Image (cartoon, rainbow, N blue to C red; front, side, top):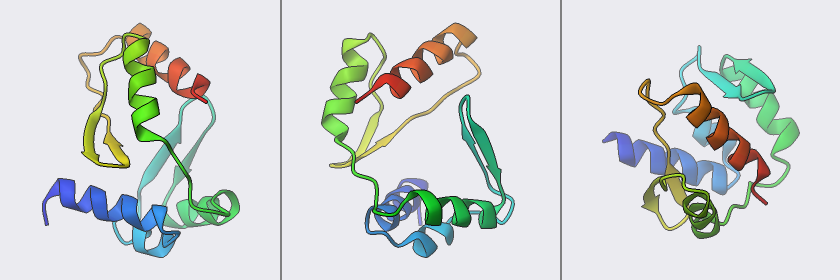
Amino acid sequence: MKNKEILIEANNAVAAGDYEGFLMFCAEDTKWTFVGDTMLVGKEAVRQWMAANYIEPPKFDVKKFDKYLIDHKILGPLSIGDDQLLFAVTEKRTKDELDYFVEKVVDFK
């Protein structure tokens, strides 16, 4: 299975509320960082967080978010499906660029 296919299948599992299906794609020592908030370390921590916070599968308007980012002069992400986006953050980005990106993501409604 190719990386894009893995990402799509994992995201589809979350959208369907199949959190265990999603967790099959996570390593035991996975790390999730919520910028400015917390970090989950390990698959069990992610499982517990999802159980507490994803009472219903998250809903997200991808096209609206993509337009919002472009309107704020942030290069849009790569669309990997009708309802999924892929972001790549590289070491070539400055701290100010990443801070601005995170600020806009947090402000998105």
